[in-house]
Length: 210
Image (cartoon, rainbow, N blue to C red):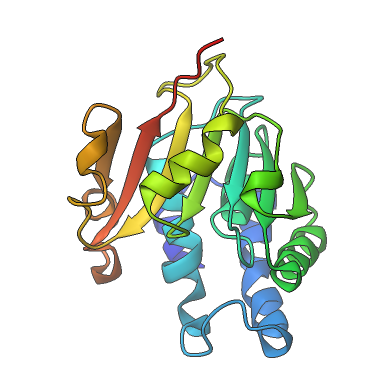
């Protein structure tokens, strides 16, 4: 938990309490439904919570911003972002029902009011949002294909509406065809731990015509 306070020192009492509760909740749920690798659960705050919050180093979601977390798994990056941005609205979506159940139960347990959940495939979600966030769910080209329809036109944030994807490793090939619309941030510029050396946030602006 200290690692979250290190990078986000201005948490409210409620936010600090919500983040602090995640360890016991995920540890308990992970014994029933494997949403985080058994070996990795002790790294929950660094590898999962702080990694999710890497997006918050790139954008400060304005009040009323709507975000869909596609392929949320057990709730990453959606739940940490929803704690940090209570004024934004989050829709966490996954095609695996038991993972959605874990995310939903965790959100309920910590009293998150700005999230909703769907057990669904990306193609089934018709609503529109300012941003779609994901964590290594699928290649960017596929991600754009399935979620372009979900990006609304009206802008309210400092960066254009579109996709914000947490990615790792070599991305040159993956984003070669989207040079004009993709921006890549190295998380190692913001987070000093070794784990973030190869981690990135990729933003793809999606401009949907009328």
